[in-house]
Length: 289
Image (cartoon, rainbow, N blue to C red; front, side):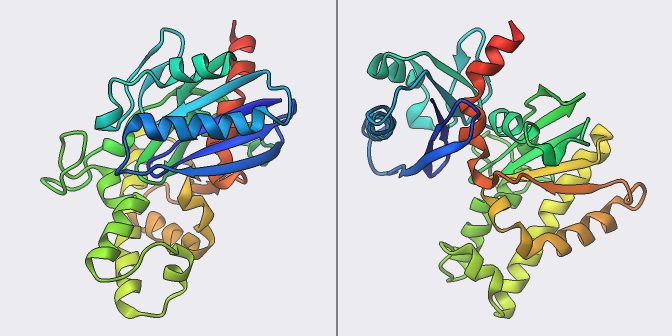
């Protein structure tokens, strides 16, 4: 058995997977922003140990929300309070198991490419949309880079981003950006499915503007990279059916040329792709050695 962990912006996703990487059990642990990183990390490790108590676990894989180099042990989590915490070493010490790690978007991409649904994709861009936006470039069915395209500026002198820039893609097109806008307008954004089903004209306009930004970012990235197969993952994959037609229409309009080439895919693993791919990191390491 293997355990996969996806460290997200609002919660930890933990999965127990068999040797064929089928999900046997999963749980979500909320990250309490008012509590210390050590307290939240203790809760994550407790969740991992719950799975270790019911079966023999071979290894643990962790998807981290930051650029990282799993080979040389370099990473810095994109949470100010977590910046100097050695999360991986803490998990190793507490579990006495091998722990592999890599960028969270890369983990999600690895898992998705294992699915036969994507057998025809040789080159593409995986975009995971949640609290932020993570991206991976796929070439010859391999992840060749984990470019921070969520921090591509799409609005000049726009909203302040945590990276220090203004107008980044993720400050306008992430689910956090959508939820923040809904809150600012007096709506409760917790149940996004209910939000997308709403007939409230103001909500419809907010969603339409969010889709404008999402389409704009996708068009910019696709044209710049000359790659037209786009895979959507993260929390946005869970609600894709609600906005699929409108997003496709906006992308085709924005592309002008080559719009017939653009194809939008959604990972069948939805928001589980991150921890599934993390669980596969041990296998990836062995295959690449």
